[in-house]
Length: 249
Image (tube, rainbow, N blue to C red; front, side, top):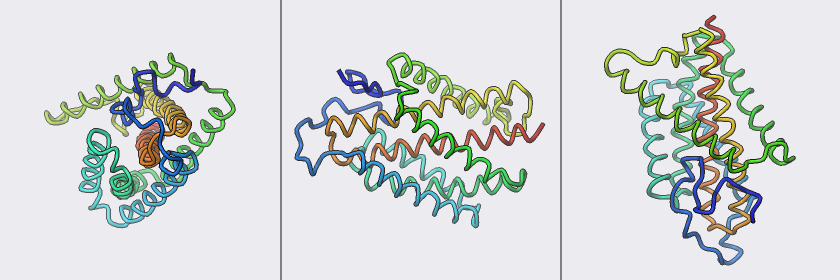
């Protein structure tokens, strides 16, 4: 039995980007057509470069933030639910669009809290590196219980986001999510969300490694890199919000 548990025996994962359609992946492809760990790492690097390039554009032209954010969201949905096989095309555009969005929103945060951008970037990649070391050393094991716990946490957070989004149409929202709310309860909530997002990175690592071991199709390199980007972007945004709350006190 595989030591990995990012995918259970039904091919499902706690990460939304890995939740559908892996029951029928090819098990006996030529070596040149199989997913590799190095390939996924290289493609993650490409997506990160595109995201940083887009962030430079968004930082200098904040007006592009909203259309880029909407475009990125649509591309994410299409990649997850419709075109996993086309991730090599959609993922780069997703990274670029989300980079523009992140650049714009980071500029807004930086205008209110000087120095917050470098703090958030440093913490995000610090968490990424630390969790990767812990995962590779076996200090963190993505067991079935771990996977279920993360899935429950992600589900609860998504419901919270949805309720807050709906409430915003009626002129209100969940105040605990506001970046200007510096109460201990609000900070605690953001800290919890950051922890759940961080745990999702472990499942991303596990999925990519297991995908390479199982010989999934080559396009899964792009899809694995895409999923890692989704988690990193979520983590970065929540770290921005957390730091803003702390500095609002």
